[in-house]
Length: 179
Image 1 (cartoon, rainbow, N blue to C red):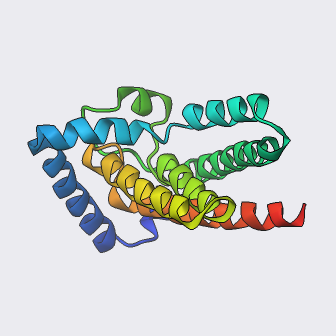
Image 2 (image 1 turned 60 degrees about the vertical axis):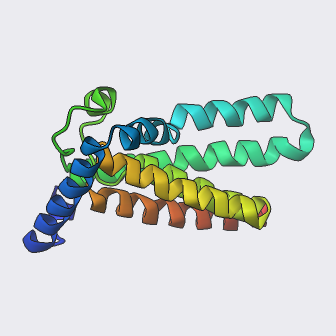
Image 3 (image 1 turned 120 degrees about the vertical axis):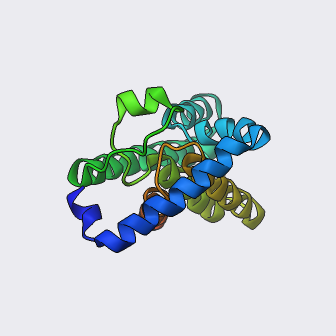
């Protein structure tokens, strides 16, 4: 938690309090929880890597290159997220949901799901029509909110992940334009 603690104790305490309030909201509403669970899982990396592989293999030449590029961008973003988690080592919030996430990855900052969803929103906005980018941007916000509401991330984790995903999206877009 070294890099995250650079935010300062007062800001971290505020982050924990605000995140706990959002998690309490998710715990009080059964409907919100039912909606949040599939949203939180919808940005799982395996789903998007499998989708990109299926499109690359089954699609024609026009979609093969963008699908492979998206898969490469997802993988690169995952590596950057892993580096960030290794450096910060911030523990996840206490909670009862997301045991598989907690076992496989005990570190919270930055949120890989928020990074991936934001990366995909940037790529959707640059590779597809504007409405697709807008739809993915709304989805990215909902993914981030669901991760906090379900208690697997603090608010700063998803904000940091979204910022990282945005930068990775811009870099991937710039690199794709040069090829």
